[in-house]
Amino acid sequence: MTGRSLWSDQVEERSPHDPLDGDAQADVVIVGAGLTGLWTAYYLLEADPSIDVLLVEAQVAGFGASGRNGGWCSALLPVSADELARRHGHDAASAMRAAMRDTVVEVGGVAAAELIDCGFAFGGTVTVARNRPQLERVAEAVAADARWGDESHLLDADGVAEHARVAGAVGGSYTPDCARVQPMRLVRGLLDVVLSRGARLAEGTRALRLSPRAVVTDHGTVRARFVVRATEAWSAHLPGAHRDVVPVYSHMIATEPLPPEVWAQIGLDRAQTFTDARHLIVYGQRTTDDRLAFGGRGAPYHLGSAIRPSFDQVDATAAHLVRELMDLFPVLERAEITHHWGGPLGVPRDWHPSVGLDAETGIAWAGGYVGDGVALTNLAGRTLADLLTGTDSALVRLPWVDHRSPAWEPEPVRWVGISATRRASAWADRTEARTGHPSRLGGLLSQVLGH
Image (cartoon, rainbow, N blue to C red; front, side):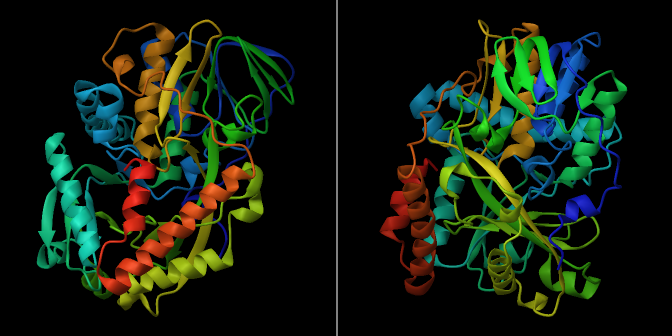
């Protein structure tokens, strides 16, 4: 079982672009060449092909969550519509939900129009309930979706089996508003498009400080009219942003390609993505080459928001994911697990993603996706392009624009709180599976986390 990402193994290796060669100038400098940065460049150049866009990347394009995620392009938001309505009003929440549904379609449309072979398949998501508390949460979520115009359907056990044949399923739900993608292929395809349209890319160039109209890097200073921070989890390592987000690790495993007789016992024959209704999130997809890729949260948060390569592959976490996957699909008991990998995602204190522009300093930002970034990065890119070009659109009036999350607590309070929440989520899941009754602690966690 290799510690390399399956998604990276499925794309051709390429030589990195050269680092920045001394000081430079641009109209827009984007720090981070993940999906947020690439989508922003794409829509800026679509709006005005003469804009000089420079992407500055500490590693290589797609190195972060953009190239390592679960491959769900979904209408999910980490903050619920009810919570959005409480903070921003009913109309704003409704507009945000509609924008997310439209964004899934937009990603597929761009992939088709630009001939990006990223395995985009509009298969939807099946959420499985395996005990009564989970079924109650699923039913509540379906009712909430109906209030906000989101299409979702409550399923009995037979209805779930039409999508995925999960052991112990007692019911669930299905929504069409999600597509399966191969995320690294999406990154590579977007990169090729924006470079062909005149964007520049400096890889191996670490941003040391974002300043008004300038970015100081380890290879020189870039002066620009606008600076875009598109660094997600790595924002926690920039001066002045240490407590904006915390890097929380998510990990994945992937099986060998599975034969048709095994897939006949699993389902997912329309490229549906899948999850269940536990508190500690898991997620999976049927890949373009008929593997099953499966991931989950629950890795430890590292004191001081540390991010290190050694955190990306943890044997104990991989073993846990294998056990959980076999529990869901016992037919995989003899399947070889060929890959395991992980990486950090950015979590703001209130789980509320944001995008915005400080007109006075020229510094723009987007992030705090809490793992729902494949679609949100596209919406961010479109919104940033409108903000930077002064376009008065419906996107710039969405409720996440210019939202400011509160800062995370200083250490070690931050570590204690996040670690306790992770342990409490796992405990609530075990309690509900054992007793068949809702965990009061689980309900409290849902209130605290805003979903």
